[in-house]
Image 1 (cartoon, rainbow, N blue to C red):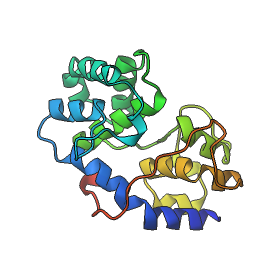
Image 2 (image 1 turned 135 degrees about the vertical axis):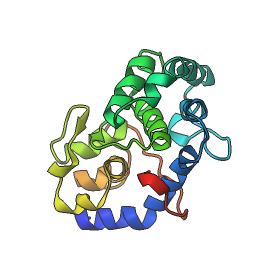
Image 3 (image 1 turned 180 degrees about the vertical axis):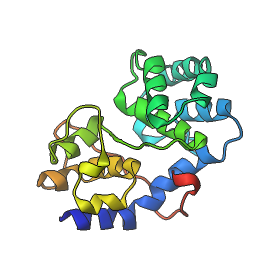
Image 4 (image 1 turned 60 degrees about the vertical axis):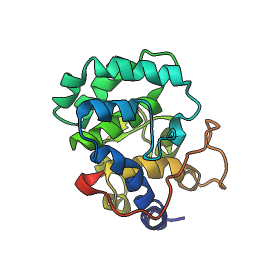
Length: 196
């Protein structure tokens, strides 16, 4: 697949589903509720988000407790990067919480706060897709990617790097090098407000 085809496929088949998964966080009534739902990785139907389905409930409960203790600081985060750093510092040390969970929780809370990633954050499967562009580290500026990716937000690029890791690396579809499979968002939902 070309880069244009990958971006077109993401927009056509995945964008609306990804937005729908985040919509519930936009509409919550308080920072405390947003932290609770994000940390417990709950969907609108009350079930657990796919990325965190294997994490023991106690680990997510501990993450929520830790994040609630800094909810004032979370609400005052100046941008997504500051929010991500707060979440990482507070729950990163919890055994069972990895890079993907930190990012997902920060992204969900960020949707509530109107703080959206300006960089592309790397973790788990996204690292595999990012290697196709020579990217390493924890995050990068999306402006360094080829032109077709400019049609996507940094959070959408994060999705693409995971969902299309094999296509970007020029491999047949299958497991990523790290053995993970990205969980793809559900399709057919209306667009999300406020950029999430």
